[in-house]
Image 1 (cartoon, rainbow, N blue to C red):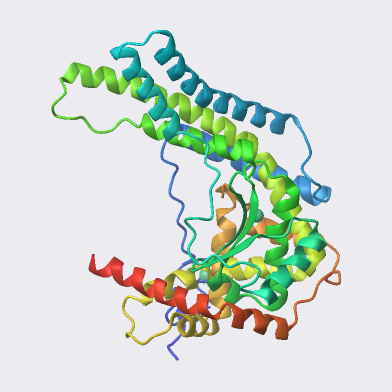
Image 2 (tube, helix red, strand yellow):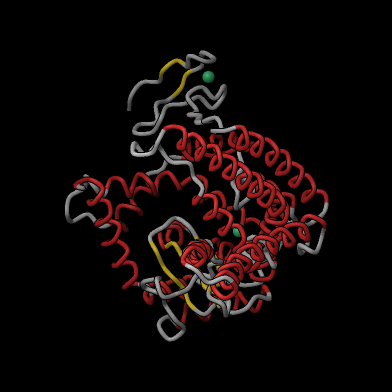
Length: 417
Ligand SMILES: [Zn+2]
Ligand SMILES: [Zn+2]
């Protein structure tokens, strides 16, 4: 072992952590902090405003247990704004039809075409399964779907129609298509890092979104946000085309910049309106997960996500330099086992420092863990046995192989192209 070094911050002795950054757990010297300032005026405003909201929401949840998100002023306002956005898209189509039928000539037909193209570009998107490779259905994975059905029944959510295993460090629950079928996105690297009851905790949280009526994931508000984003992209002021006359460029840029600004402002208002509902919904999903798996395993699952996300990133990056024979799953298990407690603690503290920066989809993890710690210890409502876990692992074996190959291919592509 290498020798201890003297901490430049407080003068105490610090043991070097081998391949990991050396840091001091007393004065937090060496704790890598990456607080890049927000880019623009609006973004800075948005960040500080939402950070205050996040804190207030946490205090609120600790004081009174998370409830189902009901109808409140913010929610109604976000729905109203979404309906205005969708009405805008619809009126583009109506305008095009009116132009063609009421005053048909070359100019109006051209204008109608532009209006239709715009409406098509910003149309609400419902998502679909067609472009999801490797979706697994009920008959493919009976043990997995049996577990998912038990969880859905326990939480009170609709059963899922398909599971999409992928190579991310993530899990998600979505309603896709106009029929709003339920789909579970299952990042197998995350799945593999969790204990059986932590797996139940993560699934409980995801299914919890199915009973929330979460406004952002919802049909109306969610689609309006993507429409606004795409519309804003249409007006993104690009660099000057050298063929245009300077004054025209300046005027065009002025128009585009103001439209872009207005749309940014609307997008921020809509995001802030749904942020409150979203954060509430996340805590509510956590509460459902706690009832299902017990608060300790929910907190444990969050901790795994906080402490091993970087390890996942490094493991994927290392695939580029590894020998041709290295298997992602072997590497992943080895890296998880080799992660020292001091490095886990360093990552926890780095994550906690990010508390004022807003993760738009979830409240900061350390706050969610803190809420779990305020709950009384409880017996889980559902048990996943190691035998069931092994059956699920066997069912997903082709996906494990496919994902290992895919991760290696994308890693190699990044190096050579
Ligand atoms: Zn120190
Ligand atoms: Zn969530």
